[in-house]
Image (cartoon, rainbow, N blue to C red; front, side):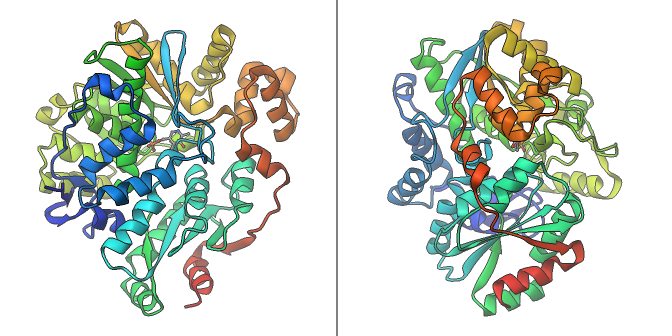
Length: 494
Ligand SMILES: *Cc1c(COP(=O)(O)O)cnc(C)c1O
C-alpha cells in the first residue's frame, strides 16, 4: 500500500504523494506528513555497496508509492548525473575524527541542490499522473541560496516556468550575480524594493488569491512551490543520511548496526528533519545535534520546550540560517504530539498570534534524541581557522557552525559523528578568508579572494563560480514590493 500524506493541521485532509508534491502546502495551511514513517529493510552489507542513485531509489520508493518504478528511476537518473562534480554525489570526508558529508557538489554549490535537482522531475511526473495540463509556474521568494538552486533546477524543464523574487539590496553580490546570469527561456528573476519578508508576504498573497488562480487557470497556468516545506524536497534529503551510513561501513569506520550521531547546521529545520525521518526508518542514529547561529530560537526550544520568535533578527555570516520561524519544525511537533492535528494547529496558531508556544512535558520526553547547540559569530570564525590550521580543510560558515557544535558537544561522546556540510567555502569566500587571515585579505575583491582560496586550499574552483565571472546579466527586472502581482501578470501575459 502506498503511503498517504495528511496535513499537520487536519488529519482528514489526505492526499497521495504526487498530489502532495503538486500542492506543496495543504489547504488549511498545514504541512503534509506521511501517515506512517516506513521502515527499510536493506542489509548493511548490501547498503555499503550501493551507489547514490540505488540508495535514492530504495528510500524514495517507500515514500513515493504512487510512482511506478520506471517513473521514479527516471526522476533519480535525470537529477543525479554529471550536474554533480563527483560520481559519489555526496562524498564523506574524514577530518580530525569527524565525518563531513559534503552536500555541495551540485550546480549551485549549496545543499539545496540535493533536493532541487530532483524536484522538477518529481513535479512534472506528478502533474502527468494527475492529468494536470496547465503549465506549472513555480513562484519563489528567496534570501539567496534557494532562488538560484530552484532556477537551475527548473530552467528549460518542459511544462514549467519559474519566477523568483529577491530583496534587491538584501543578498550577497555573488548570490545576486548567480541569479541574474541564470539562463533558460522559462526563468524570470525580479529584484524588489523591500526586504525578504516583503517578498515572502507578496508571494504568499498570490498563492492564496482564488481570483488570480481562476484567471491563471483560464490561460493554462497554475502555481506550485519549490519551498522546503514541499515533501518533494524533504524525502530526497533522507537519502544522503542512509548513503552516508553505507559509506561509513564501506570505509571500515563502523560495523553494520553501530550507532552514529549527526550534526546539522539548521535554519528552516528541513535538513535535520530528514535525518530524524531516517532514524525513524531504522537507520541507527543515536543523537541529532541541531546547530544554530546567533539566531538560536531552536537551541532555546530544545533547552526549555518553549518556542519564542519574539527577538531581534541578527544578520550573520551564515545567512541561510538567519531565520526565526523554522517552518519544518511543525512536522516534528505533529509527530511528538502523537500525530494530533488539533494540538498542532493550536500551537501553530499561538505562534502566529502571540509569537510563542510551549510544548507539554510528555512531548518534551519524545525529544530526547535531539540536542541543541549554537555558535556565536566569533566562535564560527575561530572554528574555520582552527580546522584549517589543524587539517588544511576549509569550511564554509554554515558548516563551521555545525563543526563548532561537534567539538563542543559530540567529540567526546565515543560515537562516530557525521557533520552535514551544507555549502562550498567558495560561496562565502569573503567570510571564510577573513576568518583565516583578516589582515592579509582585507581590501581584495570577491574574485581575487576566490583565487586566494584556490591557492591555499588546492580545491578546484567550482564551475558555478567560474561561470559568473564572465556570464552576462540577463535579468534586470526590479519592482516595488506592492507591484509583485502586476509583474507576474505581465510575465505570464494574463
Ligand atoms: C538552507 C541552508 C541551511 C539550512 O537548512 P534547513 O534545511 O533550512 O535547516 C544550512 N546551510 C546552508 C548553506 C543552506 O543553504
